[in-house]
Length: 350
Image 1 (cartoon, rainbow, N blue to C red):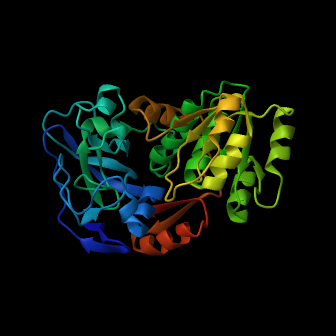
Image 2: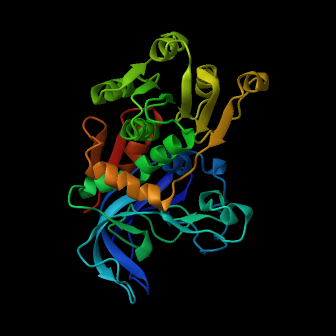
């Protein structure tokens, strides 16, 4: 089969590799679409910034380079392994990519497997990934799509689930207000999640004119934080109070500090983006505003299903922000996404 394999910094190759076969409790998918995530860009351009080593086999999975990339994907079940009863051949599925965690550390004991230092996911440090024609995964990781959610939308479940989890971590109730800093795929997902949760007063801050146009076309309130006054826009949105929460989906220090300044006293900042660089900020502002800062990584299995249900209910619209490319366009897509061009890129695999 054809697959995109990562060999090292800025070295991804489209190659022919053997098709996998499902073992007991597993299913084999014919992949349809796979998305490019910000973490895939980190793999490609900045592997040294990853929270795990690529130079040695993963201690739980044994996976090592070269590695098939891709953890945002959908496909159709074409083969099932022994003992599988909840998924059948022909089911269309979105894949929950987290495959393993140690089960023993403090993070695992507290129900936070994405925070486990030995966490392993398809497309990063588990054998196999979504940027291939076929993938094998545990049947429990194959979330069946209802009739109203197609495979193209199914490939968006994983990235939008990240935004859904960030919105959940914000604690904002229906009728509240929020700022989303950054209009990449995670920011778009957070905006959709707030909308589905009944939070209508949401401002999206994004310096890229291209991405602002995408959000505006979806119906979002948008602002250019470089050339417009973010504080004035927040005052207008909230009657001078400040937003209940802000989601950092930008991964930039300036976005974090400006977002913190826009919070209502007692508000919450949710950091949902990878940061390549450290930043400075004044902690006294946290003390004076009794501000909370929380992280948001990954999602819960139930949140994966909540996103699928929200998609089936029509809360998600792919118009204008999702583009499709053949697998051979992967490297060019990496470079364009690095420049902040466009919304979400899906690779066609089927």
